[in-house]
Image (cartoon, rainbow, N blue to C red):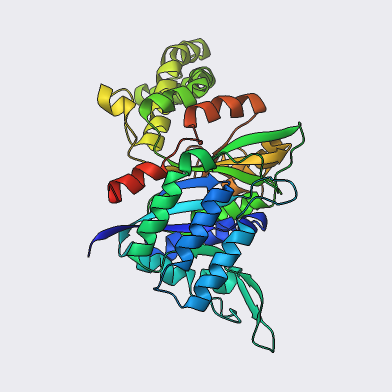
Length: 388
């Protein structure tokens, strides 16, 4: 069976209600597909109108459902008519065998009284009809393609607008426009993507209690060069802090080996000599965990190219965003993190600790410059599958 590229659009209402994590977790865990790209959009009136037209022309759906969805897009995706501010919509791309059908089945159909909870729309959507048979309210939670042909048309359309309508959507209707609003970066680390599971979604759900808004998203394969830059400040800290640890461990090891006490001044000298080397080794292990490459052993091409590992980069915005996210994340060591924090729930040790978050507004600005969440990763995938 051929490998396909499928999409899921998380609707503005689902994003505003912080249902993002639950929806992402469902799609990843229930389809077994690889999420290969993510991008936040603030759809322009032109994109909204064209997308509604694409939906209305899709004869694979009943005409009544097509019209309901097209009218929904015109109403829910368009900028606020009163303020002109954008609405947020998150596009996710999935790759794998029979991807379009798998995404469609997990999303579920549009139908009255969606209550069973079996599909994304059963759980997060609504379709309410009155006794007279008229539709009273529709919220489909997500928009997906029923066929490969529909996926092709939709993806080609959205990729045309990806550069102009996508990126970091900071001026959305539900994002605070106060000058004190902060942006902060979160990386959901590679250990959460070793196999298809709902952990990335659960982590996003925990962060949602911050009340902040996700304004940018990117599936990112960090290069070794970028990882060295990103984690550069950590290297000096490790070289300094590990001197004492090395001194103590070296003293114990030598005492056991030679059957004699090692004087404190000798242990101190051992720490001063070996501590920086051990710090460098720990630094390279962090880089290898994030990229899949050992930085001191890879080629120049491997250094500059995309890493073997992937993470999900998210930009959160709102008042005091840095501190709110850090408090939910928890300290570096998961064993010291509070109950209910991300690292206590999903971390393993000080390196495999589920997620990263910027520790200051200055760090956020620096890290966002390295990760480049605004970069268009949707269009290259669409061109790969649909070059004409």
